[in-house]
Length: 214
Image (cartoon, rainbow, N blue to C red; front, top):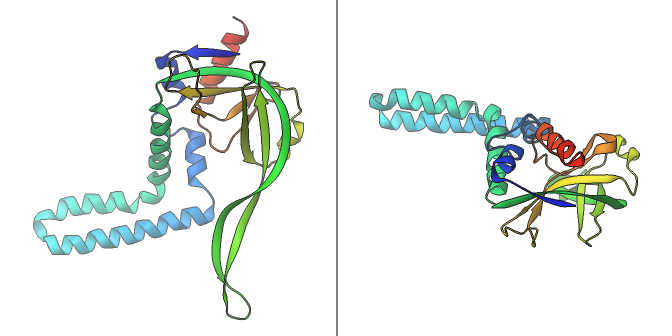
């Protein structure tokens, strides 16, 4: 099932600014927070040095910029989520898609690399890998897409054949070509699967219920 949505509904589903789930996604782990704190400190020092060069006339502006830079650790996740959302909102058309889970499998993905010194004092590259669940979704038209997410205990409840719903994005008014899909919702488990929480989830569930009863 593929149901075209109005532009107004699409803009409700993908917010121009960060949602709570998106903020949490970009907040990340302790290492991510420490990285943002380091950027904040360096930025403040840079702004203060610039302020010394500009003199007293720019003191108020320099102080304002220093405060903003110093709080990067706090507002950074909002900024990066909003940038990502705007990339999706550039697509002209969208549709509500409903299909089923065709396959479930687990992979191990490379998510980053770190340089560390081993016991012999040698610099080595350590790969950071993460186990991820993959869902192949499809419908009667032959359309198929694979959704991926970090593997969690709650994924044990997923089964082949369960209904899956998501938002498809396209630059063609008839949605004949799908350029992007969002995270998927599994209604029977009230479970979301995806690498990034694109959707305003309460709005999407409301659309799902409306179309199910239509």
